[in-house]
Amino acid sequence: MIRYEGDIYRPPSEAYSLLIQVTIGCTHNKCTFCKMFKDKKFRVRNLEEVLEDFKWARQRYSRVERIFLCDGDALALSNRRLMPVLEHIKKNFPECERVTIYGRASDVMKKSNEELVQLREAGITMVYLGAESGSDKVLEAVNKGETRQQLIEGVQRLEAAGIKTSVTFISGLAGKDYWEEHAIATGTMISEMQPSYVGLLTLLIDPSVPMSKDIESGKMKLLTPEEVLAETLLMLKNINVEKKCVFRSNHASNYISLRGNLPDDKDKMIGMVRKAMENHDMLKDERFRAL
Image (cartoon, rainbow, N blue to C red):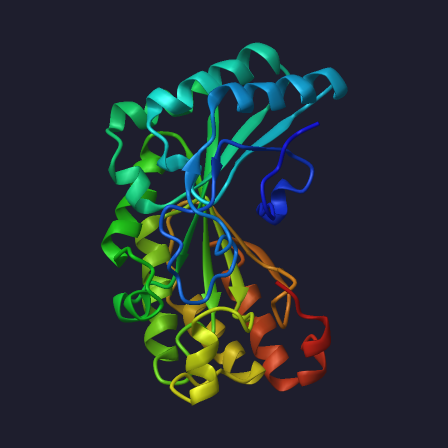
């Protein structure tokens, strides 16, 4: 059987993908809001173990159309380490239509344009990046370890290499003090990035993460559901993309569900947010929100 170490996390859109750990944990693992990999120390899995997991899957699944390479930022691997995995997939899973991976902007910046193209030609179709916010002030506060400009450039370079990007942001991450800056800067960041996909989550904090202490002490004041809507509205107003960008805010953490393609559906989604601001019955009950 496939040997998984610790809890396994994958994007919602990878629900039906074959999940294989090529790394364990996250290279950064210091974000104050995140608990995903706190119980793991980053390491690279032995290639033989990885290939054995693929062999087990090949023997049991007649058709594997999607593969997601775990853990937190497996793109941190050098091409020298990634290419044998991708070559194995191409040879042994010829029916596979897409291979995706988590990554950080800093991972992208360490690779040349030629290396990014090499990954795309070897089968990487999309990279999931957690940008969280477009504000440097907020990024520093949550200890993201990356700047606005690094995140923008990382996404731009991936897209230029023909690798699609799915970028995640978090409503409410800046609290009451900086919500307007967070909203505007996130909207303008998306405009500059021009990603293929954007996912907007809403902040939910596990008691074990560092940010929970700031909330308990009053240093950070959480937004109300109504304030989250106001923040989302301001962010949408500041998004101006030129190419199609699939926008989704339909995660279990969100108070309302938004789905559309930017720029075509921008006004429609703004209208939905305004409607929810007037009719609070549209908001998801706190009991049903989840990470």
